[in-house]
Length: 116
Length: 222
Image (cartoon, rainbow over all chains, first blue to last red; front, side):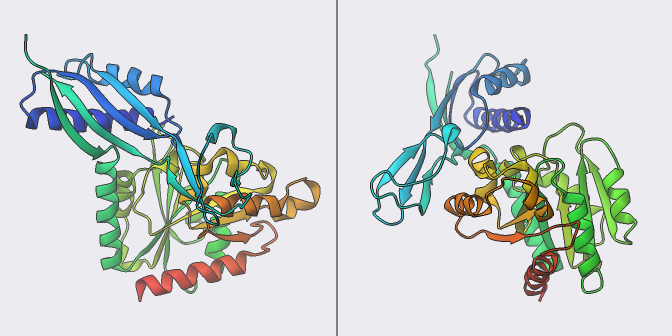
């Protein structure tokens, strides 16, 4: 839903780093986005293609790694992955305890990029 | 052919927004103005709840309201009718407020004349959760007719808020909303969250919420 604005931020950061490193062309950008985010990979790429026209990042491929939502049981310490889209309840599969802490799934960053 | 190089970036996508949000918080703490960001889905009663809150607190605190709306002035007019400073930000189709939009809103208000500013964010449980507005506390409303499964459908929103107001409690007898199950789901996502059961219509629970808000604002601006 707000992919356009997020994609603008991605492009700004990419262009800033490309310029700083004297790049002529951006080939690909690697992103890490947690599964808790509702962003759709396909739309981020489409908006990126649209926004990056006539820049050195035109035609760059976004490689989006989705980081699974992992939570840790506060009682027995067991870590487990949950599918946030099919979440019915949060409960430790080992000890059935319900109090857990998020370990990953909220990531939102640009890891690196390939340039020439 | 030129050689492909790998450039490490390691930068948060939201870093620009987060930097503006941090500078807003620094400014608010200098100006001694407490800012809360109120989020919910459309129709959960944000404006009514703000009006009720103003009614209870406007004699104790100098309050301002920033209304975000995709394209209308209706909410700001209702709030201004209460004799409170109100600013409307039209988001121009955007589904949320970001820190720069809030900064614009704050720039058109006299912060040194205000103790508390309430942001009424765009009605939406998805996008506003991803953008730090610079607020000191995040507050959300879930209303009874929306259902007790919302924490499972919008986990990010419930995990970023400091307070949950369960509104329209007067509808509870007519619904199959399971308050206990909802509370458990919310606390599983966010153990620090404070939950108040309220009704902007009957006034139930509003005093407890106002008491909390007044206390938080007082300790921030002291």
